Image 1 (cartoon, rainbow, N blue to C red):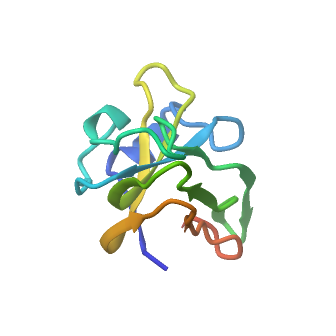
Image 2: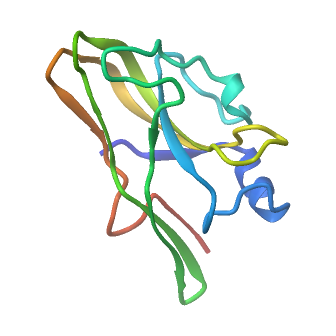
Amino acid sequence: MAAFNKFNSFIGDLGSKVINLNTDALKVMLTDVAPVATNSVKANLTEIAAGNGYTAGGGAAAFTSWSQTGGVWKLVLVPVVFTASGGNIAQFRYAALYDDTPTSPADPLIGWWDYGAEVNLTNGNSFTVQLDTTNGVFTIG
């Protein structure tokens, strides 16, 4: 499983109530251009082209829980699946998690995964962004 990398602005966005992990709509988008920790909003990233099963903006990361045990908070989301249909999905290497709810700033970034090599998703095949349902996408504590 690819390791989660957080964007520098994420913790500040939590602290200033830009991001609400209990109620906001979170999404995972795909890119073939390496994110950097100083990116702060979705517009800083280059999303792959929509089509053949990939929708602009990516896929919804359904909320399971944002809970704490012993002072450590854990976010659990349902894994996001992309399925190529009607052709191949554009090549990608990175998946980025962002908050689709806020308008100022619009679409603040949370974190990303680097799969270490290009992923070529051909017609009829699926790719799952594994969002660890046991240990959480990330913990803060």
